[in-house]
Amino acid sequence: MFIDLTRNNGKKYLRLADSVRVTNKDGFKVPKKVVVLNLGPLDKFDDGEPDYLLRLRESFRNGNPLIDALLPYVDKTKVRKEYRFSFLEGDPKCIAEPKKYGHCLIERILDELGVIAAINSYKSFSKLKYDVLGLFRLLVYGRILNPQSKIATFSQNSDYYESITDADYKYNIYDTLDFVTKHKKQIINRINSRLIQKAGRKNDIIFYDVTNFFYETEKPDDDYEDENCNTIKGLRKYGVCKEERKLPIVQMGLFMDENGMPISIEMFPGNTLDHQTVQPALSRSIDDVIDSRYIFIGDRGICNYANISHLLKRNKGYIVSKSIKKSKDEEKAWILDDSDYTKIGDTFKYKSRIVHKTIKDENGKKMNITEKVVSYWSKKFYDREIAENKSFLEFLDKLVEQPESFRITATQAKKIKKFLKSEFVNVETGELVDSKKLKTMVDIEEINKYKKFFGYYQIVTSELTMPDLEVIDKYHGLTQIENQFKIMKSDLATRPIYVHNPEHIEAHLTICLIALIVLRIIQHKIVEYKKQSGTSKEGTHWEMGLTGERIQNALNKWNVINMDDTYYQMCNIRDEDLQLILKAFNLEIPNQFFARGELKHIKKSIKIF
Image 1 (cartoon, rainbow, N blue to C red):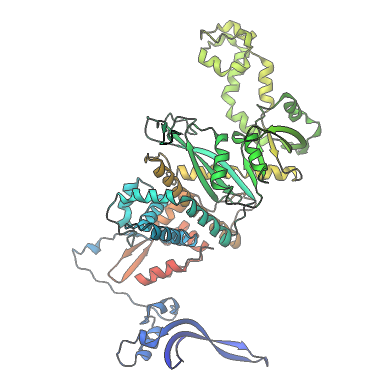
Image 2: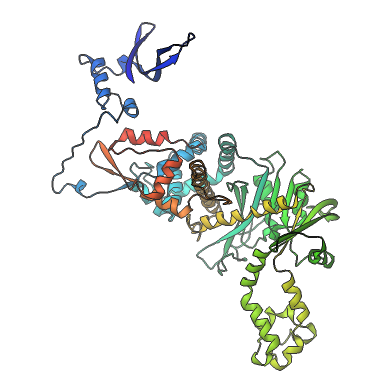
């Protein structure tokens, strides 16, 4: 490549060009000049000293161009720069002080998702004076790299090689939370639009599940009345905590696409039952956003025909598991009838049937529907249920065989109540039951019935023509939401939640969602790279590439050290996981020191989609 001088309307312009050989119409190889980079008018760069063009060309050949924009095009195989640093004893720079550089990848992802432009746009309309974008970036970077409290996250500003925000009032970080909540829907919609445009997201399958996050407080929020005398429910409430902590919780519903990429979240008071979150969550996040038909997939905790009618009226489909325990006797008998199952060896069997039924819609009105019911049994699930219930089953067996060895309290009796003949249960006094009478009280038939359904699952779906195995396979994709919840609760430290203002809680969860999307994009790129390089595990479903924790650790290792006012040194670049991330994004870091402009160029060169 060489520096070329051209003229346009009599004005001199500089450009970087290369000479290549092409085949002309006569079939002969001839040289052709190709423009690589337009630099701009000569007078923009000319320093007024003699022979500027000659000096520019020589500096480019020597690998130290006078114009910074040429640095990425220097042929480093032919030219090697010599670095010399000198420090006096006592100089603070004698002690290395690594600064974070890994956040540059996060910033590029946020930029490609349109988040940075959206924040700037909404800020310009609001006329806010503080650095909203800087504080927002700081919150997202901190949530991924070093999740802490909001004020502690503000203090991380100096941990980066360049300050993220110029804000000097730390409590503006809470104002930023208000800003995020106000524009939550627009920000999330912008992200989803970019994922459709750039990453080819498809919305034909939507998974939904609910989890909850606890607070380090024992006092739940009270309900209150607004100015219109409407009752507003407090958000932090006692409910069924997924982690069995006896603390107030908030419920969160998460929507996810078929590739395991989050779509949106909605929050609810902690005492809201899972199935009660479905319609409000769909109304807020999905109904007005996704016009095309999709199949909604959820577990039995949210299987409710009022929810199903909400979907059917909008021409959407569903695949949801249904509790066998709550099914009618005729349905249970059909599930256990082994005569019409299709068997795959001794480890799996399945069957289906079409049923017509009358249900009540979300407004309580009757509605006729036709759905497919798929029943299947899995040896894997059977063994898992046996293992999970091992101690309880052993207890029941001993109770039958050696009742004289046990004395059962009222509390224990409550747990085994369904296995006792009701006419012998004293539900009023709570007295100790004489163990000698237990043998006649234990209902062996009920115990056997309980065991019979181990390994069986039931799915109902609107997709009448979808093959049974495809229905089952698509439903199993729901397990990936559990992985997303795990990342949020562990790597992103979403809980315990310390902010208490409802707007701040919603902003906190929104920032955690954005952080989760960033991690999932990195994981997808790693998976793609592994497939292309032939290092992906064959047959691995929902491969993550790297766990959230390993990505987090690798990005934290990607640091730089400011050697002097000009150059920076990269740190830990040969870390195995960091190398995998860099290769996934087609980034190759040369063995050199880097000027500040070169660090910025590395960031700008990261291709996300």
